[in-house]
Image 1: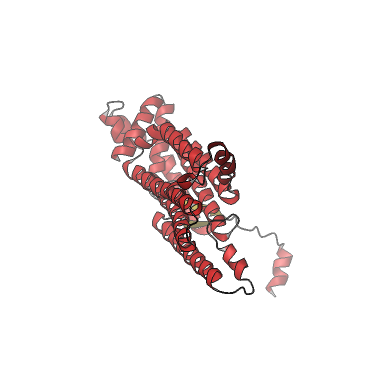
Image 2: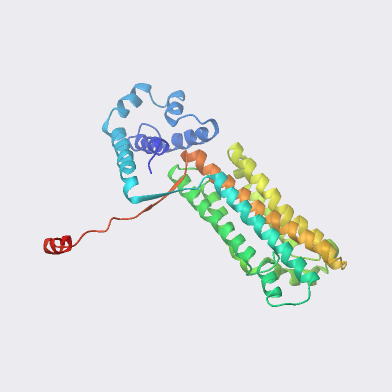
Length: 329
């Protein structure tokens, strides 16, 4: 749906097409808009790039009116053939928290039952399905889907940034690719397949028992170096969400993994390993949820409310007059 923000963007692009402002000036104005929240038109005027009289004249012209008419038509048709799904950041985050809580509690209950009870029908099967630290389980599939959802949102943001001529569009695109890979990795645990070669090469033990944390940590450092400029230039709230999500996620997948490796290498108790492994997977899922909340909030702040619309075309009535008459009886 076209909204005031979208109309403003389209209008700004029309100004570029008309040669009244340059693409570089538009990009600069968009950056300032993201930081200050000022309307693009106000920024154009404040910078002296265009006169207020010109803006007023063009708004009264058919260009601006046409964009507003498009918005009105879309809104009029939306009630008839569009379904609206409001991806509220708080709503999505709340749902994800409930799912995470369900998986964590179910995992703990089934693992404890498996440990303290004699074997019975489906005991191991059910506990394995809800085991947090394994491939192709319900929690693993959920995490993979959550990461895939994050990748899709990143793709959406990249599309929006492209329309805005944002200079950081490639960072958003690469983030989408990274999360797409993480989604696949969550299902097949590619990172753990690095453990044996690295372990054999460096003879790791103790905290580095799960040796994949070495290349994993190096990968995180490389990521931070490459994306540092992008992170610094994010809007304040988005940057905070990303940093909080990253800290939560990494404290689970690397921090808890280090402790878990030490416990396993020193033949720690079932309870201690269960606790640290549960904490690890919980933090990973929570980190993803916070990241998705940050992404949706970023879109919401940018578009003044992100709405997914699915158009359902009306079925044409192909009945002839004679058929209609016969059916009326």
